[in-house]
Image (cartoon, rainbow, N blue to C red; front, side, top):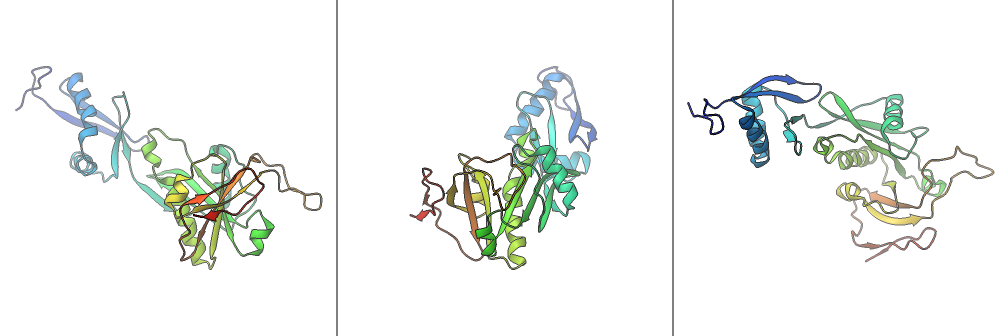
Length: 252
């Protein structure tokens, strides 16, 4: 048997216990230095090697094993899976985890995203808040909410997965155009990954009007409107002017 260069004892590493709910592994090794070295070395393995090691040691099939920085801990990544959700549950999740928006008052459809048994994100879609867009038969992705989790790799690509599902579902239901909004200054990386492009900028403010009162909102800052059309790809290079109320983007 190979000897450990740290303690000169027979080298070994084994999984003592797997905590499925917290995604943690309990490991044992011939010495703490060898254990630390094994955990640090996970960064040098390929994802396929980590998955194969986990299957061989425990019989569990996982998407990946994530290692935190400066910590002797490995985290199991069970992969992301879309699941159905009821509107009350979606509203409660958004109320608990959305950074700057209240839950929407209603929806046409929604979906949840799970990592293993834990719900890590939801999306909701419904009638556009703008009467002009509503009259055009659009549907709006009203909320995409993802938990702030550590390590972040547990929810990597979660937003783009939810936006992509929203578009597929909308197109299946006969909609030709999907719209959504981000605050001015947000990158919109997840939206671009899901096929959206920025097309307009608004000055923000409340939807409420004297003849059409609505509840005050929490997020009344200037916003960018993003769109995705069924069967079409809009130009990705656009130029937004933020010094006006709402200007359609001139395609480059």
